[in-house]
Length: 202
Image (cartoon, rainbow, N blue to C red):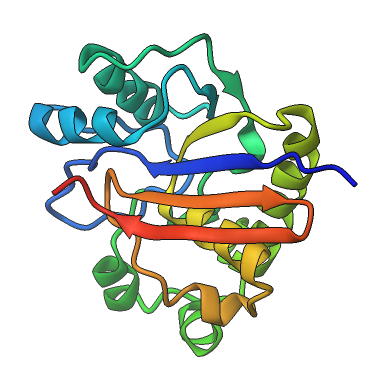
């Protein structure tokens, strides 16, 4: 029996400056990588020369740049769009307050079942779990035995935890996932093992 263990280091990207609390989803917005001390702390915790996987959005690329500036050796990234944040469709770029004030159609239904309801022209969190789970299941044997640094999004991390723990979508939404936090999931021959969740730099 194989004893190969693939270690997934899931890192949420650096914070996105947004005083109005807008829904970013899959919008390609920049992040703030000025907290150099946080990146220094992360480099001390991350493995040397991991396989780098990114969602393809600029905030993940910038976060990788912050790690490299802090001294982490990283090769070219493998871009995996299936690891992107949840697609909030027509609601992206707007705030929840704006949607409430405009009495946005579908919002009441969404809050009744935020895991199972898709925003207009978007996807549900339940669908996102299938997308992220499929990508991780596909990539794990390809990257077998490696340390994999996946720079991704809060929703991606929650979806990965749903996969690893066999959670219902609504349960996975309860996880807090802070910017620049680490979640470590190991794919073992016996199944997924959770090493840490939402470990922040300080």
